[in-house]
Length: 283
Image (cartoon, rainbow, N blue to C red; front, side, top):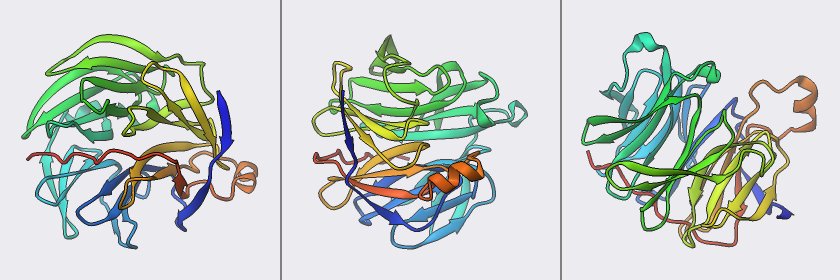
């Protein structure tokens, strides 16, 4: 495994408690991301919106609005207005929504979890024009849903067990296998994305970096960052050649924060490769 120091800039002065879910919008040429604990939605153009409850992630919709994964369910967001959209689970389960992505057929995939990964009560759902299907159960911390460039392979991680999984993907998930073993890389798998060459980029929570992994599951390189809790990744910029990286300062001691003054920052990394345009949800 080739280990290199990332060539980065700090893209936002804000220090998130738990930065997550960077999402590049080609239409507006800006990046959205969230502070789960804020709870706040940000845009790289300097806008920010305070939200009424925990927000796990953000996705694009084909009408130009956003879809937010809130504690209570999915919501549509446009012009500062938040409207409930779909509830995935009964509220008495006390789960919240976490990572969210859209596949190349315009369907949302979103995970649920007990906050802080307290129990394996979570699931992975697929949402197609407001119709909800439960795809996986028994999940503790759902993270990193993304697809190969042809859409035929689905990648997913339950951060609690440390593996990155791969599935054959059409209408259902089939042929689950371990793509990267739990102990193959520093930290645990969090958010992920795939570049134009089909390599998976895995944010390593507790591992102080991002791994680039080839389609056979071999680690091509590991980019070190000056913070330990690296939470998610997304390609952006006009040419999709900037890797945006969210990070966290959650639960770090005063001593750790003194060692990591950039904890919680949003980084812009020169990754040297091009990403893929993120699909939008077809509502």
